Length: 451
Image 1 (cartoon, rainbow, N blue to C red):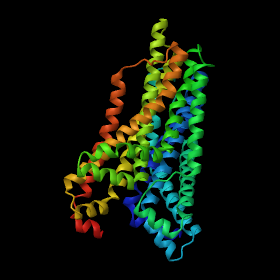
Image 2 (spheres, one colour):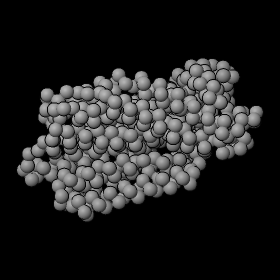
Image 3 (cartoon, rainbow, N blue to C red):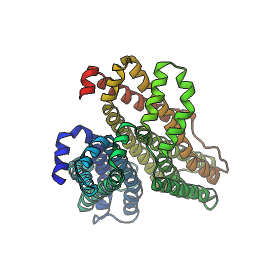
Image 4 (cartoon, rainbow, N blue to C red):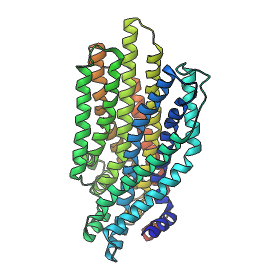
């Protein structure tokens, strides 16, 4: 099965692009931030400079690790779900669950090693850029030289490999437990059913987010910028919790919108039908929108509230506070880049997989315009759902921090900031889905069905 795994990687390279890019970008982020630990180990690095470098590596790199593991698991799950019919065929000819599991894990391990090795050069540049940012903001002396050494490489290779294989084990266990008939049904209808473990983990993430929100608004009340330590984590945890519940959310949204969308005619009816059949894929696509919106809105408004509190007190920012602001901006940049690429990967992979579906729909009488209209409606639903859930997740950060810092649940910051985040999510989702759908529709319907 290991040999089959590597032959599958060679023959189905396009199907593994999303997972590979997630691992590649994740390894780049991990090694880039881990190189701050190599830099902190220099002979002339002491005191505040050393503390700043370690904080940058541990805080931002730690959250980057969580996002990377979540993204890799999501893309691997989507890849295996799209191969349900292939898994069913292998089972029908005698493949055991253990053999299928080794194949899936072998594919993930091969991708992880290749992605981590190729990520070394860009990670070196990312780390150098981070140190340059710290130099420019006077948080680290200019004479501290950059080091990219064994800590960065070992963490990048090790964590990427372990997270990919762990995600593959989880995915393989879920895919190999079902019977052949259930696998065939899953290939036809992707219901995205929630497992008990997924519900439990979602509940745990949300409970921790609630706990941090309560601690921020009570224990950290009146403690100044220290409240950022608890408030800044709540939106990420809440976003992950809601993302884990995304199949349930998509089903509820689809049921709610069924009536209004059918008023749009054949395109609306087709959109509702396909969304009900593709709940799992829709849930995978909405996940990065939730993460992007929740973290970006939460962090931007948290920093705006902190700036307003400093201005109200007539204080100028200290070096430590400048460092916190830099961290926040780096977090936003990392999340925007990572989730944007994750969203593009997921939408491209999901839409490319629908080439046969689009062909069947056209043979049944739908025009290319109606198919594109269906994809556009799906994109609108994804954007609205993801932005709404992300906004809810951001509340776990901005409201408690506003209470702790300004005695007000109303956050500071411009409404244009929020609209910009929502607009960026809409543009990425709409443009990617529409472009991928147009590419899938280039082939004649008969060829698409026969492929």
